[in-house]
Amino acid sequence: MSPLLTVNNLVKSYPGRRNLLGRSKQRTIVTNGVSFALGSGETLGIVGESGAGKSTVGRLVLRLLESDSGQVVFDGCDVLSLPRKQLLSFRRRAQMIFQDPFSSLDPHMTIRELIGEPLSIHRGLKGHDRDAAAVELLERVGLRADQLEKYPREFSGGQLQRIAIARALSTEPELIVCDEPVAALDVSIQAQVLNLLVDLQRERGLSYLFISHDLSLVRFLAHRVVVMCQGEIVETGPTEDVFTNPRHDYTRSLIDAIPDPRTRYLAPTEFESTRVLAGASVKEV
Image (cartoon, rainbow, N blue to C red; front, side):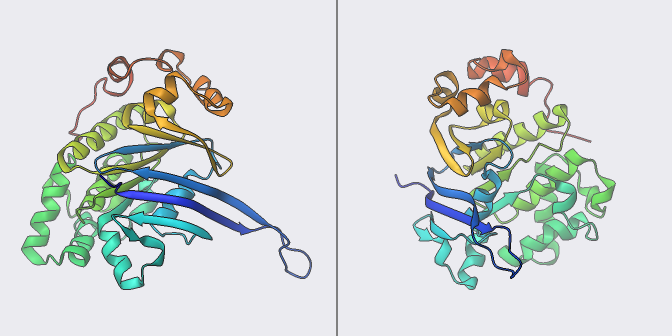
């Protein structure tokens, strides 16, 4: 079976410092020859230190940034060559959950408007049908229908990230790029949101590109892992293989830096019970 997403030799750079004439002599390379594949219903974790180029890769895949060169193929279609009209169709099938829900949601829109907007644009729903779909999405992520008329400022960080997930789900996507989706949340709320993502993947067959600096979370969620360092992939493989038998020195240093040493080399079932699933609940008031 062909992968849902294939990325080949993705390169992105920015102009470096300019001289007195305003010219830049060299460019800063952010991603350099990044290649990977993601299957349907699979989670691929992308890990690395801050500045490794992880988030840039996620934005390049969705064409929120334009690449210098390379190829992004989604379900047999070359995303980087799509004209604007066809890009809208791709955006329906591929969505993103950003790190900070406070800045990713328009503070001047109600939750009804935030979730209803993509329902109208991508699915053509209006009036009662749109409102019914918005309520269904809100309740699926653990919130209540009577919260539709509220504004983002009236919610906690965990609730806002649930709203962001509901908004991403509104287009019925096949791929979701999760860019540090729980990094801004308390640990107990992280567990709730992560379990929600796992449940949604099982229900809908979603594929996740999960970007994180927290290797403990990636080990819980990801089927395979890509390790990035200074814009390049230094190691990739099945999650347990990478964690139990890392081949690259950089990967070993990341694993050794996990704050709780008890979670470094645990088997997945042991890890789930000791860290992520403890006290987790889908519902949040």
